[in-house]
Structure formats: structure tokens, C-alpha cells
Image (cartoon, rainbow, N blue to C red):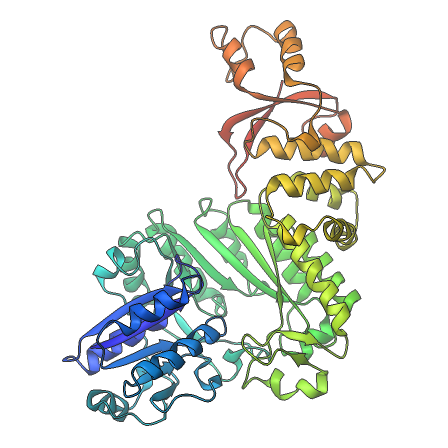
Length: 547
């Protein structure tokens, strides 16, 4: 029995490499049974160790990544003590970074589909070499079996690759080590996707490093998915400057929530992008992100990386400002990871890169960012992500951009308050964030307006009552006024028979003329009803109606 083990970040994740490995082992070693086990980094270590050691196996096989490197290293150390003669095979992008391995460990580099026959012969015999190197493979079929969707993949994300490789050669990315992109034939992609869609997974995430590297091919796959999706959602990593008019024409027809797009900007500093070999047409990229967000049907996630060469504090804040103004639904502010084998690691001394010695090798300082400044920006990123990457405060962000306020300046003020109140040591709930924003609002000249926006956003999220920090005139007083002034019936809201229940159950909020204008609800002060029914679009809220 060959025991294939994955350590995922979350329960809902799965490991594509594990299934590729199983498919190839079953093809090349049909007489050897294969078992799959999936664990997460949150699982108790000792229980995980016992579950692995307690099952008979001829060999243990792990896929090693930056996020599970430490956990797997600990596991194999203890497993080697328990069973020193049991072969342990390590593959994946971080297998080579494993050091001081026990004698029973083997490192496998490359793609399993490109493995030579001697590897499978040695697995069969149970006598493995310390290291194997596989060649790139032209063929990488979908590895899933129908029964996987009711067992290993039940209630999990499913990962799919229609291509391998990347058209870019970003110096911080492991994909830059292998040159070129290998694409599956479109007919095969469609055939495989039909099988996956039929299984109705939670979501199918394309792992293609740049899905739209060939816009016409991406368009063909999108056209196919639009016709065949049958309620399944799809996630793509895309380059924002590789869009055509035909692609946008199709995306305008996409139903809400069918597609999610992850967009790697990384930096808006041209010198930085040149240094990491990720040149792009930034004005075109920003225009395309705005156009995608305006569709209000596709979740847009934009990435920036902290700690890149030539990016100082001012430059990073400007990158943040430019991306924030594009209004993506999520802004991911990640740390540079100086991965072994990349050009970034080779040029670490040139760039003054100090990074963690252990995976995931996060940057600690650069020539342009001393450690203290990097720490400050890291907390800035933590603050911005916590408050922005949700559905809680969209009216507040829209207002800040309408008035031309610099986004990074607002978040710096918010960060100082978060530090004073111990925000990063507390559960980051909507109530806590609303209270901090309310406290910040009261320190500003436009505080009363901000408080109105916060009340509106709170009730639009479906809450029945305002929190203490946002409390105003008791709702009963507003309802009493409306009982005297509202018509007996308003079409689409209530009839004379349901009028009393409507006033009793509906959230009501009185807003100033200025806030009504900011929200696009009119030019005069008014009363807004927040209905139980949700709006359309990516961010779901209670529908607002002016009474």
C-alpha cells in the first residue's frame, strides 16, 4: 500500500498534486494499492502523526509547499523514528528545500507525469535512491475519478489546470524557473470540465498561472463555461492588461457569482516591475480592473506584494492608493517570499534582502525598507485587509474616494487607533471594526456624515439593531412618525393590510440630504427602509428603498 498524504491550509482545500500522483502510480504500478489521506495545518499534530503511523504502508508520499513545509518536516522526523526502514518520498515545489533529512527519505523533483521508469521500478522494489529528477511532461490529464467527488472532494474546492507554466518570468516566483507555457488542447479541456461540472463541486479553481495569457483561448473556455456551468462557480488568475473587446463583451453576459478573478498587480512602481521582470501596461490594467468591477457580477481580487525591490514606504502606499481607487472587492497585500532557486534569492545581496531562514521565507528588510518601516507597513496591510476585505463598509469607501481622500492616509489614521485599542489582539468582528471607525469619525470634521454612512452600512448588512457606538433616536419614535405620515399602501412594499407589520419589522433610518446625495438616493433628506430581500451584485446587502 502506497500512502499519499496532503497537508492543506483549510478543510475546504484539496491538493491537485496528490490526485496527479495517484493517477500516475495507478497507471504505472497497477498492482500496488494507493490510499489518500488529507489533513490540515490546524489538525492536532499528535493525532495526525498517529493516524499516519497507525496505517500499514509500503511508502509514504508527501507534497511539500511553503505553507506546510514545517509541519511535514516535523512529521517525517517522528515517522522516521517510529519506522526507520519505511520509505518516505517528498515531492512538490519545496521538497528540495528540506534539509537534514532522515536516511529513509527520498526527494522527487519535477512533474510526476515526466518521471522515468526507474523511479516506479524502485518504488515497486522498495529500494529508493535519495533523489530523482523528472522531465516536464507534455501531457497532464485531469486526475480525478468519479467517486472522488463523494469522498475525497466532497465539500471541497476542486483545482484544475488547463495549462502549465507562465508567460512571465517574475524573479520571485518558482514558475520562472521553468520556461514557456504548455496548453492542453481545447477539446480535452472541454471534455474534462464537463466531467467536473457534472459532479457539482463547490468551486472549480483554475491553477493556470496566467489564465488569459492567450486571450482568444481564454475567451473560448469562458464561452464554454457560460453554456455549461450549471450553477458551478469558477476562479481564474489573470493578467489585467491581457483583455480584448471580445472578452469584455462576453463578461458582460456572465451571471452574477459565476466567475471570480484574481489579478496580480504586485506593484504600481514601474522600476519595481522591471526589476522583477513583470512589466505590464499599468494604465490599461487599472482601466480594465475598473471596468470589471463596474460589471458588479464578478468578484475581483487584486494582489500587491510588500518588500519588492525599489519599493520604499512612499512607493508602496502609492501602489496601494492606485489599486484601492480601482475598487476591487478584495485587496490582498502579501509579503515577498524569497524562495530558494529563484532569481530573487540569487540577487538577495544586491537588493539588501533579509528574509526568514525557514519557509515561507518572508522578507524582513530591503535596501529600500528597513525592518522598522517594513513592520509598520505590514501592520498597515493587516489593518487595510481587515477593514476592507468584507461587505461591511462599502458606502464609507465610496465616500472617501468621491471626496478625493487619499486611501492610505485614512488607513494610517485608522491604524494608529487600532494600535491604541489593541485591535490586532482581539477578534476582528464587524461590531469591533464599526466601533473603531465610529471613534475615528468623531475625530474628523465630517464625523456626523461618516457616522450616518456607518449606520446605513450596518443595517444594510442585515442587522436588526444599531450597536451602541452608532445608536441614535430610538427606532420607535421614527416608526410613530411614519404611522402618521405614510400612505395606507405603497405598491411593492405594503398594502393597507400589511402596513402595520411592515413598519414593525422593517429597519428604518433617517438620513441627511448630504448622505442621501453621497449614496445616490436623492438630493433631499429622507427616510430609508432596509428590506429583507437582498440586492443583486457581488456584495449582497439588504435592498434600500426611500420612503
